Amino acid sequence: MERKRIVVKIGSSSLTNAKGEIDKQKFMDHIQAIAKLKQLGHDILLVSSGAVAAGFRMLGYSSRPVTIKGKQAAAAVGQSLLIGRYTEAFSKYGIIPAQILLTRHDFSEKKRYKNAYATFAELLDRSILPIINENDTVSVTELTFGDNDMLSALVSGLVHADHLIILTDVNGLYDANPLKNREAKRIDRIAEITDEMLGFASGTASKVGTGGMQSKLIAARYAMNAGVKVFIGNGTGENKLTAILEGHGDGTYVESESCSILPMNKQWLTLTEVSGKLFIDDGAVKAITTGGKSLLPAGIYAFEGHFEKGDVVEVYDRHILIGRGETLYSSDLLEKAMGKRTGETDCPIEVVIHRNNWVEV
Image 1 (cartoon, rainbow, N blue to C red):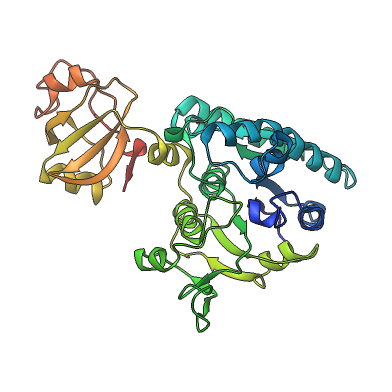
Image 2: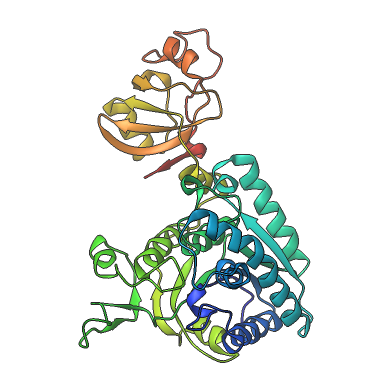
């Protein structure tokens, strides 16, 4: 089998028993399957939930805490326990894990985004297994991923993975909620994730996890748009992951032949916070959306916000958002130059957003 770069996401429900504790049999099943892929020469990154589930008992909680402080305290205790278990289990296969804890800032800030990629690249070059989780201990609500499904999608895009495998306790996407409708049929392959699919995938969250099938589909849509093939499902045994790669997995495959991998800088553009808005005329809309051109000051008739060179701004065709890009103009400079053609200002910068730093939405 050709060498692949694969992100495997394991949710809390796939790691724990009915009491919310780490289930040894489930845990070792995942270890053996991942070790099998490593032995075949693939690059593997593991996004693992389970820190809160591993730690809450140690704090005296009878069940998974619901408060932010409770979850963060449980994660602080549980993360070390979880990575310790992984380290011990993988050592039997000669695999060295590395713990990576991420927050939203690591994806929204350009320097941190590039640094994260460099770290992952170095670890993979040295055959280390990155084990990734959200830094629950320090994250605040507005800076969380929502669940590790989206974290796994963001990581798969960042490292230009070939495959994202989301392991869960449900064997794929159904055309109705299988918990309520016995006639529900599984959808084996989909090339597009529609709003209708998101609608009938809602309401299937696990008791110990935070994400249901809807969150997995949202994550899969992001990964697919980044050029990554996605699988959502389950399985058992050391060959379950190889079976998934061979197209025989027990779940749903999400992939489209039309998707191409976004360059790193354009992936970052889709994730970072914006500092302002630009409003452009019809000629500029046509130039950047169909003509492959850069955005010039002459095509901008208004803007909102205060921004500096290097910030990311949204671009609007009247009231319709069409994309975002990294601006080469500050808002102060743009105020003097907008609506004017090249040569009509004394500004040495010809373009506001270069086509290489632009992404449509």
